[in-house]
Image (cartoon, rainbow over all chains, first blue to last red; front, top):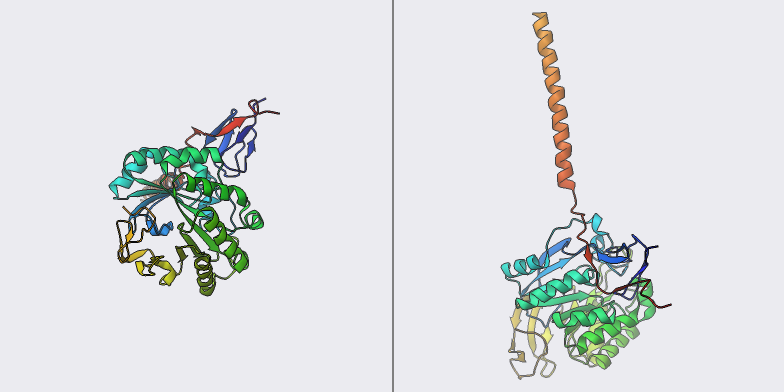
Length: 325
Length: 57
């Protein structure tokens, strides 16, 4: 009898019989070995502004070579990329793009970073890891765009090769993670702490979904957790929900809810709290936490003004944390 | 004259059927090529897993 295989990449810990796939749809037990079905086979490849990740403290106005494969280990009801994330690789249009080609293409297109994004890159871990190693050797920055539902061991193996992580902290209660994403909160919090401790530049995004996680208490608890566990300098992006996938009946997040969320974050002492998906909102901009002056003015993904010089506020010299050059 | 017309009609009919068939086959092939998804998996042995014969208990 062929052995059962247990995948120890994410906290689902799928136990797979022969020929069976994990919840991610892209990892399979064949002859007692676990295989990735999507190595070097992305289904989405684009060049994006880095602000789209969203990363506001990393190489502003630079281009990021962004890619994803099919599959995901979460089941978020609001997923904006559900066509790829909730599909097996047989149902997506894939191209052959081995790690060397990803790096070559990124350099050829004058990108300064490679973003593993769109679906959750945890599920194409081996592809991401090999690409990230090559990218780092070639002077590129690696961006881990993730929900951080990953076990400690693979995460620690990955950390030396990724410089930045844009993490979706989807909510702050176990109930929310369970009902909305079919995942768990605690492992995500642990993973975020590990990345931060390992020196990875972390920015967090919270998608504010009306009636689900938009209560003032939830938002305050989330901000408090960040301040207590990561410190006030970790940027937090409150992002506007748009009706998608299984939540088409909900309205978009009202602007005032996001404005209030940002106020709560600032009240709780976070230094960099942003509002996303609402162009021209003042929460798109970066302000100096010391003198309150405007440092980076943004409209959508465009930078209109940048007053950060060598990682410091041009006006008062305050150090602004991030990867600026 | 009637025989010549009949032959010509048969020839035209044959050619019509032949090229329609040929075109249909080629067209199916063309559709197949363009609608083909690159679904052949690149099997890569994954990291971070264990087998039941290695597991305790």
